[in-house]
Length: 632
Image 1 (spheres, helix red, strand yellow):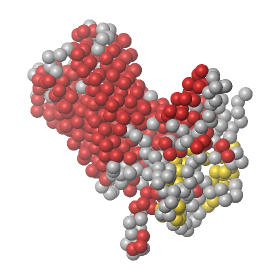
Image 2: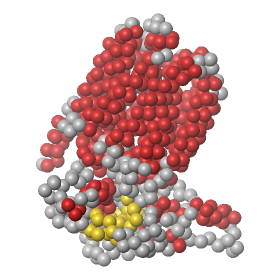
Image 3: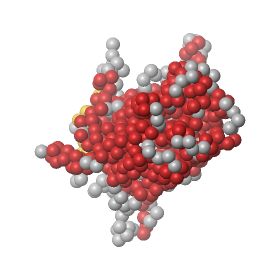
Image 4: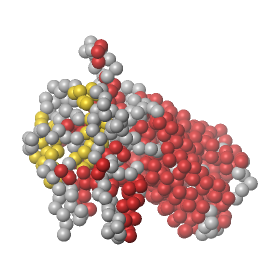
């Protein structure tokens, strides 16, 4: 018999800026809502995490984008066409993107370190097994499907953890991290073609598999940040409305979006109604006798700064849990030895649990200072000298309270269970990222189709440029450097895009569709190129301009839909891009086999890029029309 959904009352207050603040209170203490707010250190161990993320991107994308160098050799061994072998890359990228929401949910539940570590081990096995496969279909399954899941487990945690550790330097840190991909594209072809030129592809695959053991080792640096807990004020008794937190364990998939969507859960700022009660869980024992206070601004008009005493009591022992205790509890349950091994009821220590995906800005790679949610610095005239030095701290607290969604007691209690088939931490992320109601917005539909089109042909130059160069009678040694050239141009483009998005009044949407035109038109002209210098011109233009697409993506989504819908929009665009990546290279392969020339695939690449740019041009006008329609 299914359990009735948990009903939690919430109070509602309206401030002068017409914002609503919610306070959750419940008659059942087990259903109390907690908020775990992580304040990025902007340095310290974060620099180690950033270095690790850079290296992981270097190793992973260096391997992935070098697949074009193996096509002919693998095709000869398997007695098939190189275009058929390229399907493996297409499947890998597609599965990587499509499985991303599930991996995000698992990361939210189990943390960055475990998921990345498992992804590295899985990628190691994928390359090791792929090197022993002698036929195409098993190769496509192992390298493509299983490899795509492994890449998702590696890429997603290593990408979003950078934003988890950095606030002030987030834009710079994200740019440095993603530049690891470009550096991998630069150096891997050099290593494979020069240092390892005497080895067969099977031996190279086995060597590359070892680098993913290094990925697993590097992931051990991804330690979780201890959160600060924010709890509702128990003194407030007013309640106006009730919020369903979805406690029905037999809830249907069709109901999941309405029960577990992140937007249904209030932010910490709303929960606290402008009176945050911050409790530092990291230095509990150290601050037992301390009388120091932390000044936090409410962030609402009419609100006042609140002196918040640091926590001065130790959590009761029944709420403390260690890994050793969890193992003991697990084996006691397995052995059913309750008479001599009584099971002690334990609860998770709040200080060791964090839910990164409950942040509205977790996918945002730009500067948080550009967000409307981030409190602006006060004018010099209004700044009181006695408060000098507290502005940034107050702003940071206000911002993190406004973008962090609450976690329920049920969510935290699931940490003590040996196995939960579909935990709340996973369901909430799936419900948020896969809510397709956002497609009711015509402007977002245009943006999604644009992403679909560009992903159809984006990877073609990286996969087929070496084959086209050989087809045009360019020496093999020179042809092998083409991928490295694309990597250098891509690195320059990522850096330039990062600088542009930090400049005020620069429109990210305009930068993106201009970049798509600059990538698309030369791709069509490149189909008729035969001289080496024409190759280098194309490499410089395409490699640098196509970098605007991933760099500006989240910035455009926030400008178009708002920060609170970023996670939802990001998940849907991943689905569009995943499907297009699955079919993109096979379509290009069909054109190549039909025409007998690699030039046809570059015309196809250019057309998809141009069409993608055309769809982006009217988006702001469509959005303006939508807003006017909604006012009626």
